[in-house]
Image 1 (cartoon, one colour):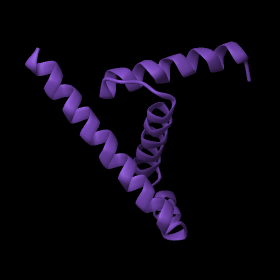
Image 2 (image 1 turned 90 degrees about the vertical axis):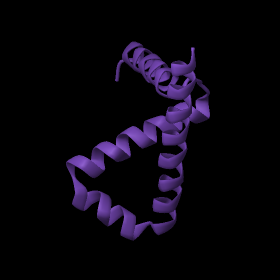
Image 3 (image 1 turned 135 degrees about the vertical axis):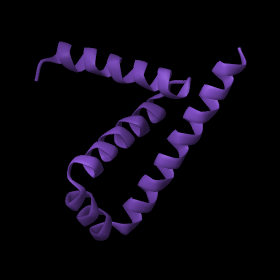
Image 4 (image 1 turned 90 degrees about the horizontal axis):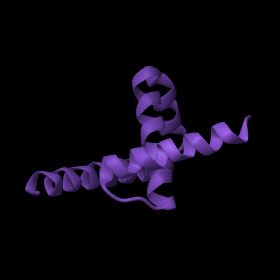
Length: 84
C-alpha cells in the first residue's frame, strides 16, 4: 500500500476524531477507528457482528465500553460547542 495514502488517511482519521469528540490522541483515534469500523460492520453485515460477539464475549463488552465512551465524548463536545 502506498505510504503517502496511509499518511493522508491517518490525517483524515485524526481530523475526524477531533471533529467528532473535540480532542485527539493516539488512543482516542484508535478507539474512533474501531468504533467506526465495528458500527459499519454491524450495519452492513449483522450476522458477522453477531458471530463475533458470540465468539468473543469479552471483546464485545470492551467494544460496548468504547461505543459508550465515544458517544459520551461526542455529546460533551456538542454541548461545549453549543455553549460558545
